[in-house]
Length: 346
Ligand code: SF4
Image (cartoon, rainbow, N blue to C red; front, side, top):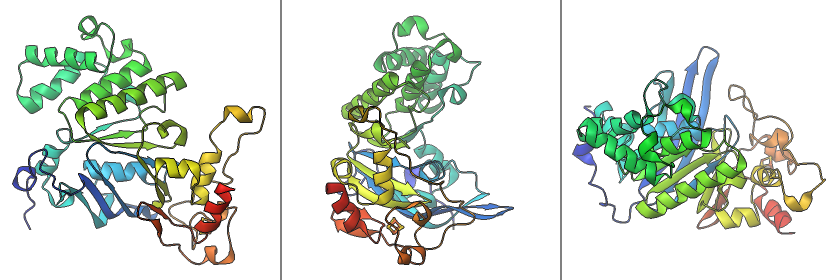
């Protein structure tokens, strides 16, 4: 069947009705390798509305970045294969679009900020040139007008003396300033969805807070949907509306941000929360979840978290927990979510 272009099927911006802006529905992603099939994403579902911030949380290898790459259409296929699932944007399954259609959506309507700004930026072009390229390529602007827009965007992401620095190269900026330049590039075309993959990992704590504040402010101004991918629960507390916690390719807990901070309903979320350093626990040893994330080529039976779980019972080793619905907005993939929730409250 001929795949469709984006303009064939997607409404212009704002044509949403009651549909969430973006819906990931039962997504599966596998990597076919010589060592075997790596099931990196196993039935992930989440949705995002305009103006909403979803934090996707988990350790390396949990599938959070692979899900984001599938949304962006930047997975190398093969070795990646998407055997099941849908990614709907304005109700249209992006997986049914032609490569040309995906290119129209990527950058223009769904954009992404990567973790490592230094390797994502081209070292041999000035930052102004790289930002203005978005306008030259996608909007057909002249070099001069593109550079004017680059200065405006550098101002918007609060790079001091933007006009003087527009012809500087990436290595002439600090890590925090380079991440601001990446943000400027990602919002250049006014995307409706912005995915930020560990946007503050390489930065110190003060700069992390400034970058998160900037993202939140830009989102408020433009009503974008924002997906924040992180391994650090502490980073998202003030900016996210809701959280999906991932472990071994599955979502193990969905919750509004305040609920999960108050009382997590999955032992893994509880472990992540307990691992956040607290000023009122000065002098005490920092908690760490015991053990390592599972090998995706050799997954544990039953609940994938059972080898590390302090709440484990016999049936956890044999029975895969479904995502139990706790309330309309909360769910947990733990047979013993009630005990975890009650323990958290105690
Ligand atoms: Fe722990 Fe069992 Fe819950 Fe898995 S199902 S998280 S092993 S208590």
